[in-house]
Length: 289
Length: 290
Image 1 (cartoon, one colour):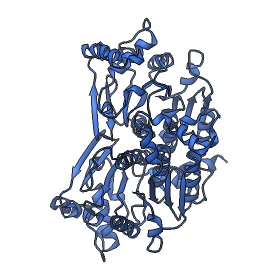
Image 2 (cartoon, helix red, strand yellow):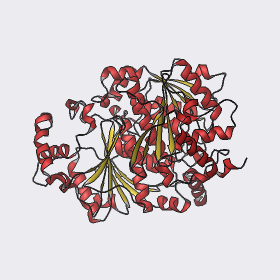
Image 3 (cartoon, one colour):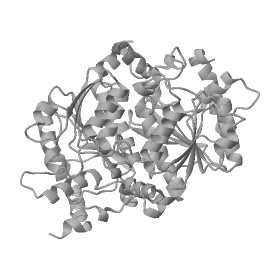
Image 4 (cartoon, rainbow over the protein chains, first blue to last red):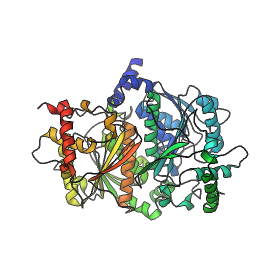
């Protein structure tokens, strides 16, 4: 039986040859990726990495699929509405790669299960909702202590912003200049101030941010683009090929305005420019504050 | 809940980027996709999740185990099933009100008009090696005034080119003629997509065999490509911004982290490009020995 499953794996990923050799494919197979959140970004990451041949996953989500998830979430379809996101995605991963080892945490990640979530992980991917700050900060802090890289793709308009928190790079709190004394709203203002006010503002209706739909506008093209690009970074990381630079450097690709930018936020959130932008955010997006 | 309501709620979160009127417009658009393999299946799923309401899809093939590394519909549970039928049910599971026309066969002279009937935009998703079908479909689409968006997954990157009925045609851009040797056509086509670019730094082009059809292909590259193609399609049908048609083409390479846009004057007649084709022909052993 074991050899059948191995044989299936070898055949399923045989067309990667020429770009990923057999030895490298084995390395990918033995990698465990921990993905927090199985929504818009997380589900897409899970499916993309499963199709790349990643063999071990730890996935976490507390939520069920709803109708308004359908416009972008991999696991959200008519037939899965009402079902647990993490369970649905585990089944999809197993259907792509029956030999995959999937650890499912059917809960929000937090202080109680962070050790379980990160145990044995080689790479961490942040697929949490943009406004989920306490869990994200805890996860990033813990990953840094354990020496794990954390990749993330944020869908911003039609674009994707790719970031990497590496154990020896700048951490999340310094990048946004936030600390425990701040309220969650202040932190969100800081986040909006520190992301590039790039091309997306030409075509995004900012009044829609955090309005009645309960979140930012998001399209599937952006989540898919981000998951594809992060999968490439994960492959490079696992195979020891130089990849993207860690924070405070990051990248944004926008296929709508046809722009790919490599950013470098010198000094992170302490940079006077971002202090100024913080004041502007409060003025321009009063509904956030 | 009725289907209109369901549609509205499904695509609610597009608001802010795609307005309600624009969303209704997307719902009325018919997209034709020949091929439900690596690129085609992903195009279908991405467009369905964007809210495109009408599809004409075609494929003659069944899913095989070695499709799993990249094809949206290929899974342990669908191996052996018809690609077009599996993708039809996936589209309908995303959007139950979608109107999906399925042609469970290869596209040829007999069904090309049926395939392109009522179509607003076509997305090319044929295999690299299906040259005759591709030329036929591109020619017919050009005659009918249908724009064609095409993405080639090349290594870790996606190469995009869009053919507009008002711009340069497919044969001129790739340098194809009637009566040309099949291998030469494939070479010219491949050179047109992948003859230059950052992937040449890490990809072994010598291994490409134009007769077997087994070029290396990554799921992540297909996925990046489908996302870019859908962005172009949405902008095109909603008239959001000026598209760049061939001889413009662009490439996003996730391996080197680069994005390039190029303009190839005179298409395949470009002297630099002709030189490139000559070199490529020498480099690929399968093409050199005639």
